[in-house]
Image (cartoon, rainbow, N blue to C red; front, top):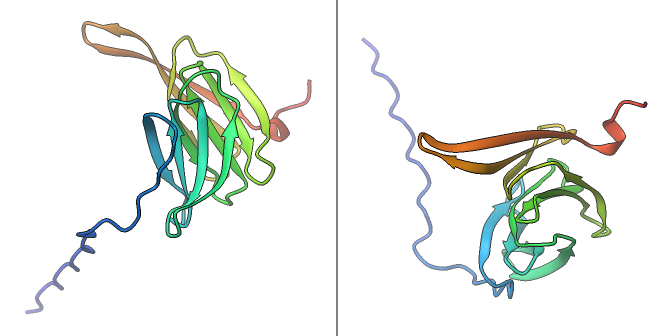
Length: 153
């Protein structure tokens, strides 16, 4: 009779602080790593999104373009694009290298709490809370196509 293999132990979490990033963004609303963990994004109440090398503690770029605090952000699988959502009810698509806004998507009735790319980074999903109901939150989900993926009119 064969016995099942024991499950491997999960990696241990660090027991000491490795780096402290002084973001200078007021309240930091979210921190997100890229897919391989070499970079991270911080979303601030100062209306900015910042790209960091967390291992070195180096600020690589600051992205400005939201009208209110930035609440969430996500990076594309190839690290070429970022998307962010904020209290200004907008979703912003960014070019990582230039730091420029590629496009602003509007249409949410409330602040954008969550954004995420699909695996191919051709679609951005965003969610906002548009009200509070007795049974919980009433949510609104939007799907945005990247400009180069849109169908011609």
